[in-house]
Image (cartoon, rainbow, N blue to C red; front, side, top):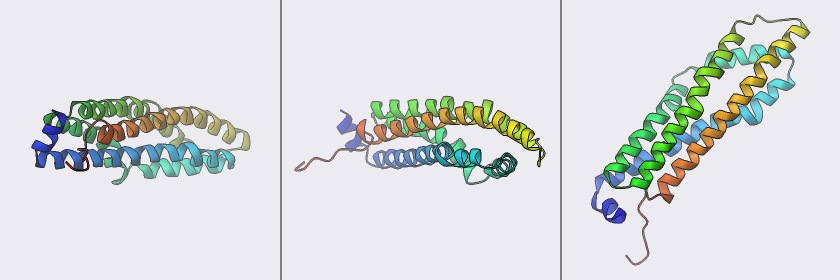
Length: 183
């Protein structure tokens, strides 16, 4: 039935495939964004002079709210849910379930921590005036960096699972028709 639904729906298959590919792309972009903070950016800032780390993070936080980041951050769960609904309309229930779960996981694992933990930490750090004395700067950076990195690791792990779910839903759950040789 799944094969018939996919092959019998013509344009719907192409629409779902396009949406699924975009969902995978956006999910990958957000995983990459969070992962880069985990594996390089924050380690580099931790190794820097705390005054430099505070000022650099303030500058990065001020620049992240932009027209490139916003569609990826806010659009990913919307795209995942739209893809789930489109897949459901074509009878691809497993794919629809995978994309819906990915959308829910993104909201709970990436957006909620961002809005409830990381952004408030960023806003508090924005109020710190540099340069500070060495001890003050070290204290300010440690108070920020530890919790921020812990919650960013949560976001990265969630976004990685979202990416895996989107990939599974795209191919493994039947979001793309499987063409067999000779038929």
